[in-house]
Length: 300
Image 1 (cartoon, helix red, strand yellow):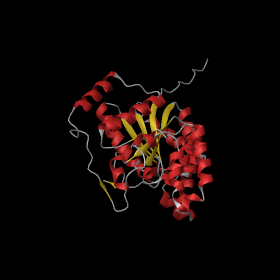
Image 2 (tube, helix red, strand yellow; image 1 turned 90 degrees about the vertical axis):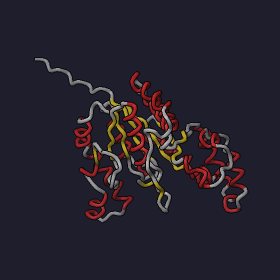
Image 3 (cartoon, one colour; image 1 turned 90 degrees about the horizontal axis):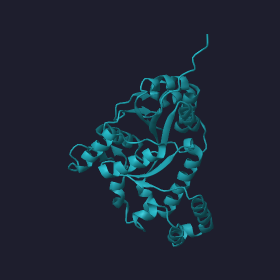
Image 4 (tube, one colour; image 1 turned 30 degrees about the vertical axis):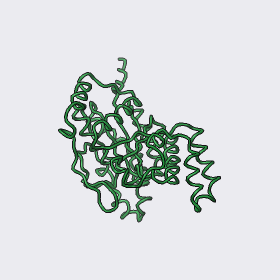
């Protein structure tokens, strides 16, 4: 008797939300979850960060059920960085656990809230391998890389962010959207040297180099900065979408960019709900109560 071929799982779409600590990944996941729910999209959040505690959103799958950073640090006498690397390697070795958990939500749109350790996305392979396995399970994912917008106020830090973003794009190997988060606070960081389009479109970086050359400290690193800027512009890959998580229009722009990147198409119901939401009074049904603590981290 001939065996029946195994059924290929249906396409599942989602976002892997990455970025350095404090860039607003968890806040983004909560905001995007609520936003998508208003559109009628069935969405679940997967917490991939073993150090994430007190999650502000309902969590369908939580890595802390498999491994936690505190347990690893205590049991193996590792620091927070080494412990987080171990946790991701442990998840990679136990992907059957993740597959079983995800299969319980096969008809949903997924938001993966990922750890904030930068080296996980620039040269360490565990997270990259996990993403590759998700693709084999028929997930169509977009990497949403959040960067705090306050880096725009400092030319040296902005060049550093561009290098990190480029390195992440090349290493992760997913459709990629870079996002400047916390745009509602950007004026608090000081006046920008150029208009916002200069930073989102990553225009001619020689203008930034001129600003750095005016600083006595950075003047001696001018040739290094010129080479870094040259690499960024030679690739021509990095650009940003500005985001204020409390603004509907801003969330819509990010969502459309993400959906275009991974091939998700709006259904008619979603389109109607989006039009109704955008035509409603601002803040009527999509508003957060948030505050910033003393170190500039958004808290609930």
